[in-house]
Length: 100
Image (cartoon, rainbow, N blue to C red; front, side, top):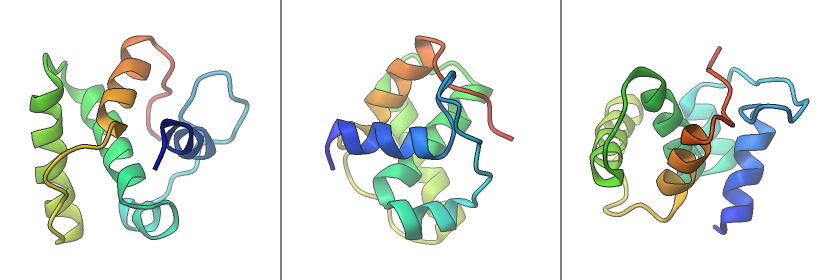
């Protein structure tokens, strides 16, 4: 999945400030089924970033992996494919809305 697709999914869910998209309050399971695993990782990372400042991409990815397995009872990917880096950049730039 390209950065454009990842960004589109975050936009589609209404998580980008100023996008004029309604925020969709989908479960992580629905996100996984309809928008894919990478989007689920991205949304989980945004939720985690709202709660805590992560100093490194690696630390955030490890938390996302744990939360993904906890919420979906499914083994997460071994490595992130750019979705976590993208969400960190967007969040730090102040372009992400808070979750519902």
